[in-house]
Amino acid sequence: MHWEPEFRDCLRLRRLSLRLALLFVGIVCFLAAAARAQTAEPQTASTPLAATTPAPTARPRVSQEIQLTGDRVWVDTNIDVAPGEDLRFSASGSLRYADAKSDNTPDGLARGFKDLIRILPFNDAGRGALIGRIGDKDVAQPFLIGVKRDVVAPSGGRLSIAINQTSSDTGDGTYKVHISVYPPEKAASFVAVRSVPSVPGVDNSLFAKIPRRISDKTGNPGDMVNFVILGSQADVEKVFKTAGWVRVDADVKETVLAGFMASMSKESYLTMPMSPLYLFGRTQDYGWAHAEPIQVVASRNHLRLWKAPFTVNGETLWIGAATHDIGFEHDDRSKSMTAITHKIDPNIDLERNYVEKTLSNTGLVAEVSHFLPENPMQSAKTATGGSFHSNGEVLILKLVATPEKNRTAADAARQ
Image 1 (cartoon, rainbow, N blue to C red):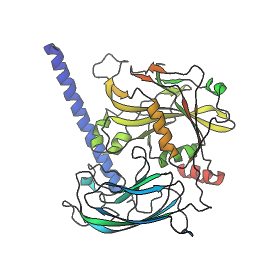
Image 2: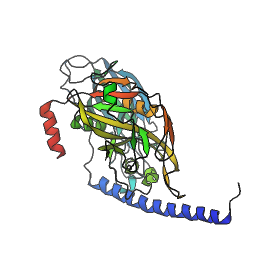
Image 3: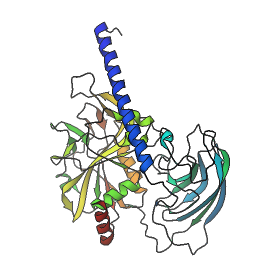
């Protein structure tokens, strides 16, 4: 393809300007992350994953010991865990990295300023820490085990354990890990999600009041409404945080595609502000993002959530639009060559299913269903010019209700 010299010069200038902007933003993001790391409380093995129970009275269903050498990342334990089961971990041993000043135990090394650029399977724990996960690697959230940990399984699935290190890391040493799995105690407050054919109050009369799509400030139609949640504000925040989603503000003043710097900090990319979009005449109440730390910078699962101006049988209703960023493309709303926006996966049903899997795995979803509205939306273009397609179904999630006294305490804590 032949390009005019003036056009080539324009492209070079554009690329240089973008690189300089990204470098500046990257330095800011890196320094901010470093400051957070230096001031944050160190994570310990007692950090909660789910409510723990008193010492089990029954005998363990499984009792097993596994050795992890310093060259291993994820290891399948061959233990299938059921929701609500009580997992007890204890670990011993030590590792030594060639560039470390000292040995480390299964609690891991403290993350200092120089360590922030290293992207780990579980960034909230130190390098070399013993970690675990339950279920599908694409949606299961890693959790810290450390030297000792007691956990109530929030979901069912295969249990895997790992050393929190990059694929290129090799620690000299071995961890010895003892795992005991106990059946759920009768008093355990765990609710397994139920798949139901329908949810009372969720019907075509309800969807007659819900716009099928969200829009930008000028009214250009955008993403499709593809899921709804029934639950209090406190329960909505709890389920997303438990599932590993990160809350994102709707403020793009200082974004400048800061996502390019995710190779330095996963958090810098996940918390990159989302553009404000509109439903019921206002911008989103929540933006949430989710990604594996090893994913490429352009990839981010994200969603927007609005509180509906009406309820369903007295329950608060939240309307959501979820899409999966898979790259960058030109923003068709602008004539400028430098107008870039995220490109979404056109099969948005995959993202709807991703939301279902991640939230259902928390033990905080009581019921899940799917509803096909009349005249379902099956294909369209976004406000920025990208296209998408769907089978038109909307995901319905009903959350486990937090007891009123606990909800009041949670509301007070947020304030």
